[in-house]
Length: 173
Image 1 (cartoon, rainbow, N blue to C red):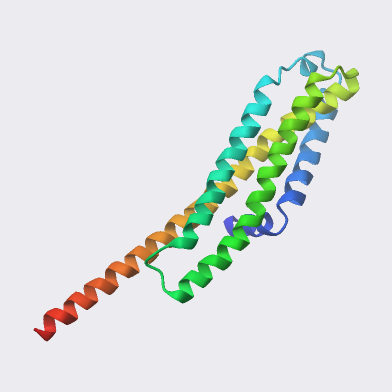
Image 2: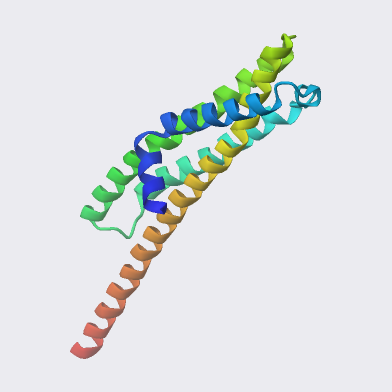
């Protein structure tokens, strides 16, 4: 399941997120279009949470960029790291801009006076972004976990290499 999720998010992060948002917002709109309390939800917190999600994804992006400069990696490992960084960076950047765009768009939409149907639609779109934040942050966590495990594997190999060299030097004496 994790591999399928990573594969989908790596290949089509925007299509997956926008499709999920369309499905969730359609369901919310159909369920709550006649509820007057649904339109009265205050979305002052929305832009802040969109910015926090984008900032957390940006931290993962910069962590990816930092892995290019691991000092204890061989040349082939560095080439592999550079390829992985390029591969993982694109979807993360797309998600950062997607969440920033919807944060700014929602800020603009909720500052305007809309007709009730448009306001209900804007509310359902905004509420559908909440699961998308969770999905994007889970994707970021998975990438961060892979970066951390790869870095620890490199450190472990480096320690094993130095132990072998110390053992060889001890045998020579």
